[in-house]
Amino acid sequence: MTNLDRRQFLTRMGAVASGAGASVVATDAEALWREPREMPPEAVGILYDSTLCIGCKACVRACKISNGMPQEIPAEHAGWNEGTWDSATSLSGKTLNVIMAYRNGTMETKDRETDGYAFVKRHCLHCVDPSCVSVCPVSAMRKDPVTGIVSYNPDACIGCRYCVYGCPFGVPQFDISGPFGRINKCQMCSHLLAEGKIPACCDVCPTGASLFGTVAGIREETERRLAAAAGSIYSFPRGELGGDRPANDAPVASYIADVYGPKAAGGTQVHYLSGVPFEKLGLPTVPDRSYARLAEGVQHTVYKFMIAPVVALAGLAFLARRNTAKTHGDGIES
Ligand code: SF4
Ligand code: SF4
Ligand code: SF4
Image (cartoon, rainbow, N blue to C red; front, side, top):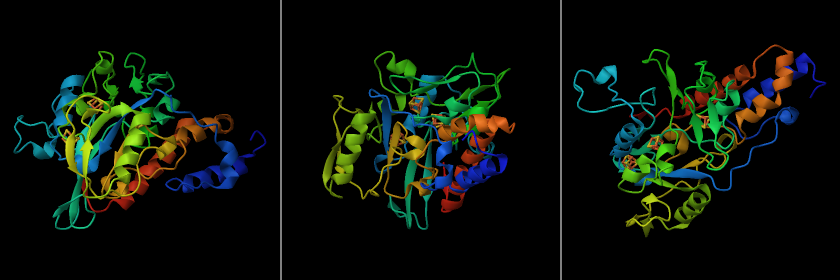
């Protein structure tokens, strides 16, 4: 890699960039990727099963309360919502977790792509190899080596917003309402976990659509659900995987035969099951490998040509989001 001349480097970066959104990256660029990070063995995560979600938004409310976040009423709602209902429509500096809806045609059937609808919950996915941690110049973003939770230290943050541009999932948001501004994102309710509790969104979810557990346990649970026959009755755990709450005994929906998260951008600790294609839910189509591997892998070469690594990473993240914008044209709204 040290022998790359400028033309070779730009050619390889172009090959990588044009492959963003596909799982295959030009062989010529292989040498630019550093070694992947491993999932901590005790990592914790959340399984969100879209087919169980009823769109009640109890998780949004509980998230606000447990994290001390203010109510949010978008300007377009101001005419009819006079402060009575938190109606956030997307992640923002005031909203760490949002429920959105996929709608198509007559919207008659839940979890169906055509003439159907489905819900999706958006918050930080707690990546195995997080771009936000990689690009932060002052280590304000940190991944816990045991739980794998990606947290944010406002005292260390200098407000550069590199994490906002570097995250391929569009998660970190900058809140400009305070005197200095600050980044906000889901930290998997680490403060509650420290007290022996579970994340607020999973705690209040009435159906088990949001389920807390170890990532290893979540993987096994997703395999069980995908193996169950559609229409058969399944005891869906609620709150915490392996917890003692009564299960939600309900019919198994027709899942698409895939899980979003285990491979996305190097893997995430939040996994999704769905009855409609993930891109229809607005989940970005990203490569299997983490952008952080590329950004750090080319770091010395990039600096050689006086380009900050975050520029390369932010460009790749932008391409992933643009690709997603092209693919979910049926409408994803809150
Ligand atoms: S989803 Fe974005 S903010 Fe969350 S850990 Fe991954 S890169 Fe960081
Ligand atoms: S884990 Fe906590 S901070 Fe994250 S979405 Fe759920 S309630 Fe909000
Ligand atoms: S609380 Fe559960 S069912 Fe209600 S919107 Fe949130 S994830 Fe869906």
